[in-house]
Length: 335
Image 1: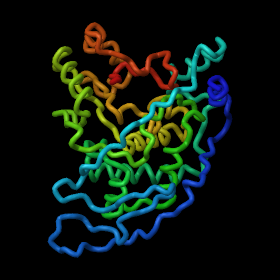
Image 2: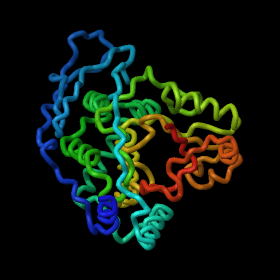
Image 3: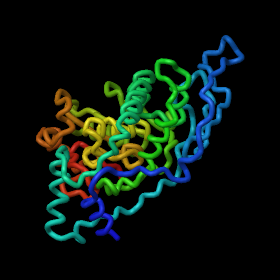
Image 4: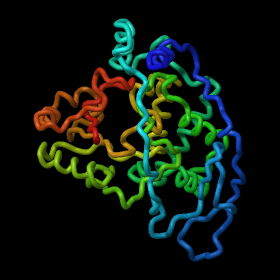
């Protein structure tokens, strides 16, 4: 099973077909917006029917949050995430197969003959969906966007003309991407966030001053503070907690940049639902290094060498990892 699924990912040719199944059949209702009864209320208008059913049959409560916490109100994150076992084991492969696999993750930004692409007819909906996600991010702010839940995203889109309500085709597309088996385009990581509508309660996170990012309280926050204290002031948080919506935007924007190549996108970052950033992992970098913090250049900094010497680095994505992802020396793993 392990080798079969891996080889299917290696030899599959052509565009991946994200086929709708039974959970994608129900259709969204009206987009009509009505005014609140209270003209003095500070809450944005609500939909005539505050509970929607998504194309996958998900029940999405669109009731407005409380005025004092318009974004990210107290809703518990789903408990009991299951870590599925990955199917790839390099020990099961021939030497040539291993070489082919390692060539991909070490040349992650290249195109390979057996990469899997989004069908060309999906390009328009990819473009409009990415644009709408970017408008949501611009409206709520980059920091809040890291925490935004799927239902909250819909709420703001439906209620603010500057964003515009997600069209049915865009919602179908978002769910197709989320529920697709990422193994088919070469990603073998665990799906640690199985629910599209997962939310991260703001009471469970703390914003890191000067970074624009949040960390989960507890292990993540404590480890970052310890690292910062021991490694020095030149170390900074470059990415913290990221919910499904944020990861979806990153992945789709990368697929767009990669000219619909889903395999290429998944070699650079985890598809939505598969990112450990949603459950505590975070990224660090060096002040002044900029975008190079997300390259192997970071591994040549004094800050990285200190992380290694002090035993803080437990690299999740090594240069021989079995997830199908590029080497990430900046990614701090939380057990």
